[in-house]
Length: 565
Image 1 (cartoon, rainbow, N blue to C red):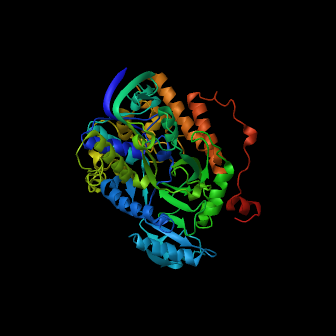
Image 2: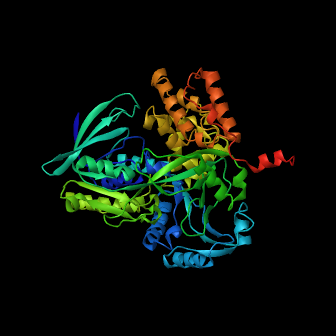
Image 3: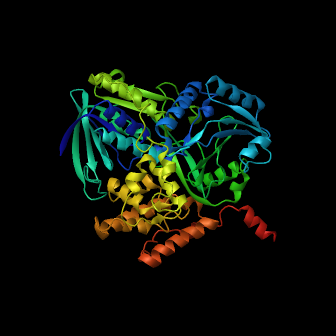
């Protein structure tokens, strides 16, 4: 199979879909290919912080200024993906007064709104803060849903004529006469069908230009074209807690360090993170002690975390990059700035550009710069409009309130559905069919699941990304089989069973580092449900039961042991 397009974008993370959207809006024929789901790489493994820029206001003011500018843009064009939580940089005993003053001055110099709260004022705003918090700087941090934001970009790209292919892995970059002329991909969903796992087919996609937007995997795509892209992947651990212990982004006001942020995200709180350079973005150790350290350190800021239930943990890999010859030895010192690598100038290889580094908050700006560059090469004279044009679902924020109770749903369910769908609420929920709640933890209805299946095929992990179904406290224990059932009768029992296996495996992957206390009980309950009701109990081979232990001791355990209730 062979096809032609003007531009191939490799990578379905935030930057890749942002580039595809920008190119398509300027009238450029573009195809995006992604080896897994959208957000398969770094984008789907972040803590959901919409940076105000305050985090960089001392050490990297250029990045801070970019962040506050893009923070304001995303609040305008993607209101349904952003929660305006606000943020606090809190100071505890022992934290430097000089650094606190530097942070405050840096924010104000970069145009980031910042004011100082006393400890009492900070606790009045966020009661779960530790009693010894002395004061705090309030900044406009926020929480952002990376899954919805990427899907919204992809939808808009398609609406402007782009072709978006997930589960399409690049197996080769085609080089002819000293230039890149396209890529070869292997489809595992069937080109264009979105039927997950049904077909394996190779396709040659010839293009005038290839954009390598694969983040931590940029070196691998570069190597296929015969050029060096020396990405330095850095892993970060994040832990998902059972509820929103805080409603504000809580940052520890100190110089760089691990375990210094708590981000409220939907119905949970996400603790982050670490920063450790690794050799391979696909293969690195994920250790239980990292999870325990995250909880122990951040409980000093928010004590209730010490006795809360851990739902799951996950690791992401930052696509850090620095120009050749810089030689930074500590990955925490590597700049978070982004770089455009024009391989014609840099390597005498026409036809390919790579984008590396950067942050999720500045994805749109990065996409604009790459699109400007590619349009210049193609002779396309069209302005960028992505900073002013709302993404699908964000056009009419007032629809969120208007949707309450309109569809015969209880108010909390309607509100959650409307928050996820934005201005698409009517389009999705206006159905004559019964519309029960399939995922109780996240209040996801059948109509949302059916809408996601129509767009994602049989891949229930893609359905999860679009709806949040199975991402709550039960981690799919009570809803995974209901999601699989929705694949009938269109796809049959074999496809439904395989999709359920994939979803169950993905949910299990993030729980195994925190199997103690309540989470171990929940995991065993989930297994019992699947084993007893669906005869799926022959899947325990290889489980090392002796590896389970009592885990970390919580305050409840200690009180129980001492006889104190």
